[in-house]
Structure formats: C-alpha cells, structure tokens
Image (cartoon, rainbow, N blue to C red):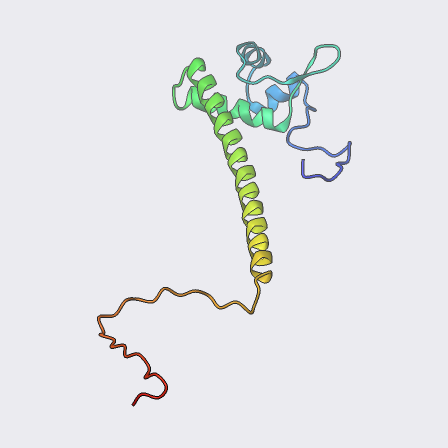
Length: 150
C-alpha cells in the first residue's frame, strides 16, 4: 500500500468477484479446467466462507496466459507452473530492488545533508594545509652579523 486509506468498496484487479462460471466464460475455458488448474496450484482463486471460488481480473488474465502457453506454445502444466513461479519471483525481486533503491537514495541524501553540516561547522580562521613539493633549489644561509661586527 502507498500509505493512503483505500475505499473498501473500490474494485481493483485483485478483487475476487467472479464465480467459476463467469471466470470460465471470460477466460474461454471450461469450469472443470479451472478446478484442475486450482488443484495443480496454477491459478488459485480466493474462497468464500462456503468454500466457493471467487476469481479476480488478475486471475482471469493468468488463466488466459496459462491457456496461451499450453495451447500455442505447447508447454506442459508443470512447465507453466514453474514459469508462473519464476515470474512471481522476478516481480518480488523487482519490488525489493525498488525498495532498496529508495532506501539508498534516502541514505545518500542524509549523508549529503550531514556532510553539508560538517562543512558548515568548519572554522574559517584556519588555513588549509597544502603539501609543498620539494624543489631542487639551493639555499645559502648566512648568519646575521653580530652587533659590532662588520
């Protein structure tokens, strides 16, 4: 969630609203196929208190994807299940990367702010030290003449 309160009556792609007959019609599959996919763990809809299946719009899209992979690509159901698991894992990892990127950006901003505070606290009466490179010049030292000598 993004921190805002959601309207409890707002429908999203995740809202389970379709009974199995409607989900079958929308996906172009037989209701028995949907039950089999549920048993295999390919598409697991939410359940009502009476154990009836309720499909969301996301579930319908996933059913269409399973059908397409099975019919058009010739992938068996075990392969499709693995593909779905890997896609879910990738999505979770992308979400985690986004969270970590946000955290890193926040830490970098805090570091820049702290660095600015440190620089602002420097004493301005000090002169920065600069390392002087040794030259190959010859310096002749002659002591100052003592008083009275010359």
